[in-house]
Image (tube, rainbow, N blue to C red; front, top):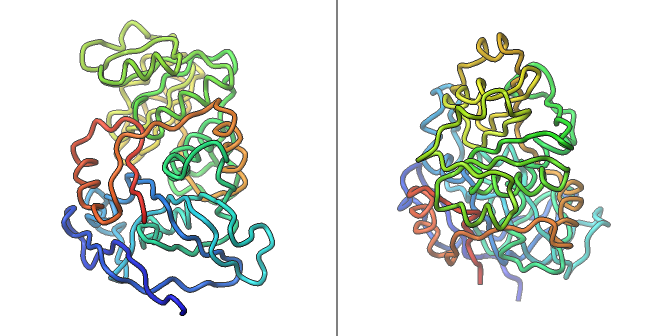
Length: 339
């Protein structure tokens, strides 16, 4: 019997977590160059809840006008169920993970909150054999974001945030401060920068101190109780995973010639201060890249990098997972499990 429907979480209109509906949906079609994956786990990311509420923080002219109903999500891990005729990189039964169709999926939904997803084969990488689907689904967007900021941009697409391409800095022997070090991007960026020989200053709330010790950071700063003033002029690179208007507060601690990288650049108003201080401000937008994910996956495979899980929810409870996200203080990643 041919399967034509699946369970999925869909949005019929923008709204709060209760706008997410667990219901029947059509099985996705398979286009040229794509694979169909039976999903075992879905990793949650900030664009999921930004899209859910209609990107209310963006200027009105930037907000999406998608076709409803839509299925949100981009990060998946699962098993290949079918391949298009022109796909040779994967076969039925292969275990894979990916960030699908990003950044386009940020505004239209990547259809990951579902039992099946179809997407370009080039978005996928083999799932590292020694980690489960939960950890494999948690990795793609956060790991690729850290990779493309710190290790290798990996593409020549126009940068939507600045008129020059982002160029990852040299890390070996540098002092790198990572703000939001306990979050999804932050805890993976700590490990990648450490792997590349950097001295790591991790900034997060006190609840993340034990994790930072486990990740062998060189210095931990609890931003709720300590000031950054004593670091003035001592830091070569800042990766601010929080970003926004507050990113400018890191300019005084950077050495002249240093680099500030806000992951979320909207609202940043410190460009003039950075120029006067001789600081380069650079950002980029993460993009799907199966090749990079496979390369980074070797670090997951050998244990050099590990993914921390904040909490697990069944796919049917996606609304509760979004409620958890809205509470903040996420350590690592939130993941949906799929029957």
